[in-house]
Amino acid sequence: MKKTLCFILLAFTLIHAKEFNAPMKTYMEGLSAEAKAANPSFTGFDAKRGEAIFLSKHTGKKGTEISCTTCHSTDLKKGGQNVNTNKPITALAPSVNSTRLTDVAEVEKWLRRNFNDVFAHEGSALEKGDVLTYIINQ
Image (cartoon, rainbow, N blue to C red):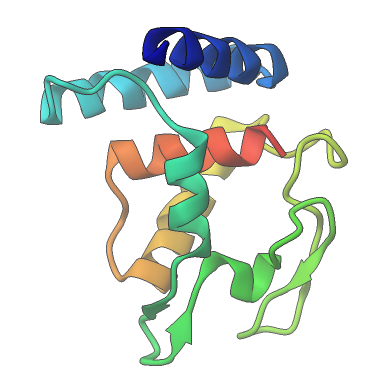
């Protein structure tokens, strides 16, 4: 029974999963290899873990409580606003913003900046992969 339920959930997730473009797939494969090297029991990235990371609150680099949702909001299909610069941020969800998660250099740059701003560290391969898996499925 448990195996059947797990299989159904996995199948549902795979059916509804969105795909990265070829360069982003290569980037994700690299993150996967790093995550596997750090933890041999790693079996794959998880959107639920990514969501938990995205929603979690921390004391950011400026000493105030912050999360990814502080700027991006909880609805990634809508835009947000940078709390430091007040600049608008376009929707993060690739389902409504086709330019999101398409350029590896941009993704790496913003992951590095945002992880440092919110979590005060660059982010592990597992954290990055989980967050990207969460975002691509929005």
